[in-house]
Image (tube, rainbow, N blue to C red; front, side, top):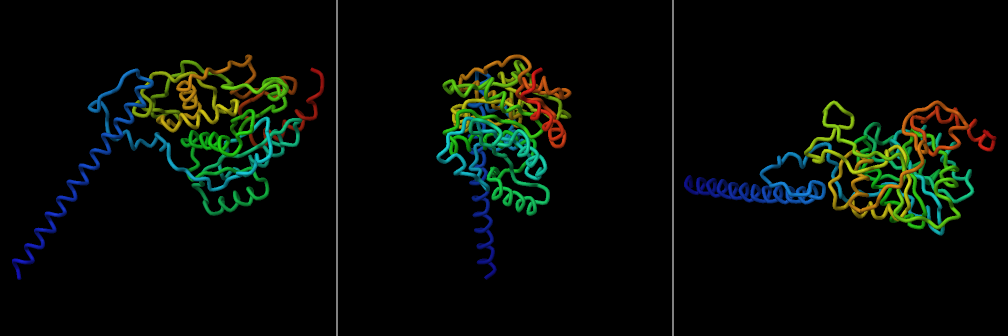
Length: 339
């Protein structure tokens, strides 16, 4: 009897060792595949492949490398918003899921679709809440029913997931609003002169452009390598010394065909959390050059409000919430006044 028990223990131990060895071999092979995939992506910017020996495995679980592509699901969607419509402009606003106040103020100001003489569609892009999740989910569902402008997928709503949020917008335009002519991506803390954008930049009477992308253009920008920086990007996440040219993230505009192309090419690129730089990488891969706008059209800094100046710009940064509401009534009331 004692001999049988020992034999069973030995067999159990032996079987466990075999399982561990199999698991280790599978894990190792998976890690090598990940390295090879990373090498292929990096080679597009480095001009050559790095050997496996030069890489550190923990890079693949780096917290600053958002997992993409991934089958993110639409939790809240507006699949029929563009049905039987041909919007001239889709405005997709990136906003935190819990920021109900910003959404209301934008609906009252430049996000009011009824103000314009061409068809405009407004959507708010949000992720999943980290704080008071059930309460925020309930508010978002109620907003979605009331206004029909909330788009949400199942990634966490964080600053470092802005790239995922923007790609969600590209996916939504591609799948649910392909009839649109142009798309404006904008943050919630912005002044936006939609009327000027429509009639002095996009021109609804002209044929719709293709491969068009414009905003405040940045060239030869270097990744921030200091860990204390809000925009820190380690070499393990992005190895190059400079980014390709890109448009400043708070606000840029593009033809809707570009949304489809960016969404497609992003499926094969390693995503970085700097959303505007990543979109620049996508455009670089697509060989789509940026259209440089007239100077001062897209202002990515805070400037004091002056209704004559603001009438001839597209965006001004740092005008969110009540700051936006406070200037909007004067701006809209005096939009026809001679300067």
